[in-house]
Length: 121
Image (cartoon, rainbow, N blue to C red):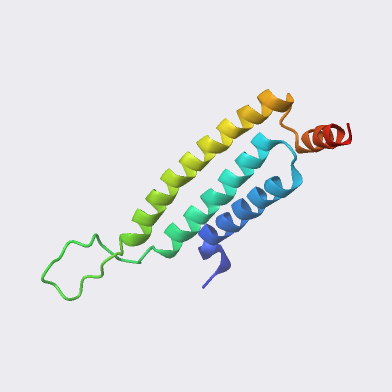
């Protein structure tokens, strides 16, 4: 199989590495959430890509034994994961707003410095 024929997996790898880099390298909480969302989207693409069946059809029973069916379970699981991901992102944004109200910033290093100064005082 040609490596260009696996372009879905290459897209997954690029998105996963970009999301992981943003998550690790940035100190801004909103940017970290964006990186986490990109990483999560790459996982969704990976599961959907792996569940693709060549020549598969919807699992509607037909009396023909030569019909190949596609499994709908991975797609249902990804749909559930998308809903959970949106809810998690909403909670993270709410917490980020609360952190901003408390500290006046959403930069992690500035929050650590403020906490260290508060403990020293």
